[in-house]
Length: 346
Image 1 (tube, helix red, strand yellow):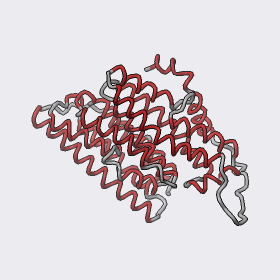
Image 2: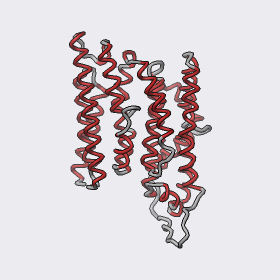
Image 3: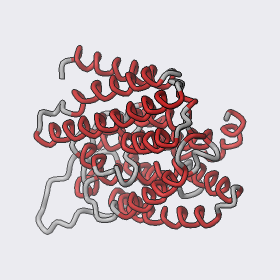
Image 4: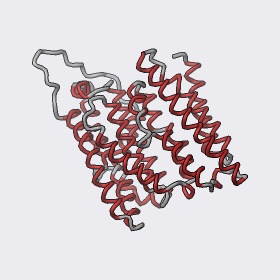
C-alpha cells in the first residue's frame, strides 16, 4: 500500500475517533463514525485478495446500516424533544434504536455475523484495529447514553454474546476467527455492567485491548494464522511462543493473570446489584471460551503437528521481538497485583 495513502487512512482514523469521543452533538458523533468507517476500508482491502474485498464490502454495508439507524434514532429524539445533545436521549423509540445501532457497530449478538468474516479477511494489523480501536467510539457512545439505554434488550444481548462467543469459537481452526468470537464474548461482559458501573466497562475495555494487542502482535511476529501454523511456530521464537500461552490464559480470565481482574470486578458488581443469577450464568458461559483458549495454548506450546512425512521446520528467526509486543505481553501477564493502583486512578 502507498505510504501516503496509509498515512491518510491512519490520520483519518485518529480524527474520526477524536471527533466522536469529544462531541456533544449527535451530528458530530455520527460524522466521526462515518470518517472512521471510510478510513478503515482501504486498510481492510489492502491485500487485493477476493476475501479482503469481500470483508471490506461486508464491513461497509453493516456499518452504513448501523449509521443509518443511529441517525434515525437521534433525529427521532430531536423531533419529539428538540434535543440534539448526546446525553439528552429520552424518547423510548430513540433509545431502542440507538441500542440496536451501537450493538450492530460493535458486533453484539444477534448482529455479530459480519465480525468473524471481516476479521478473517483482514491482515493481522488491520484485524487488531478492528477488534480494539474501532470499538472505542461506539463504546464511548454507550457510556455517554448509558442511563437512556434499553436495559432489558442490552442484558439479553450481553448474555447471548457471552454464550455465542464461547460456543461458536469451539470448532474454529482459524486463529483470527477464534479471536473474533473471543471479542464478541468480551463485549458481552462489558455490556452487561454498563448501566450500573460505566467506569468498570471502560476498565474492562482497556484491559481487553491490551491483552488482544499482545496476542495479535505475537501472532504477527510468528506469522501464525491457523492452528496448524501455530503448532510449528515454536521453532521461530520458542520463548515468545511460551509466553503466548500465558497471554491466552490471561485473555481467558484465569488468576493470577491480568484478565482475571475485569471478570472478578464485574461478577462482584453484579452481585452487589442483587443480580446473582446473571453473574452465575455469565461466569459459567466464560468456561466455553476457556476451552478454546486452552486449546490454542495447548497447540502453541505442547503439541507438534501430526505429520507422517518428514517436513522442513522453520528455522529460528534472528529478528528481535518488537519492544511494543514485549510491553503488552508483560502488562497482560503481570497487571493483577497493581489492581489497587488501577482502582485509585478510576
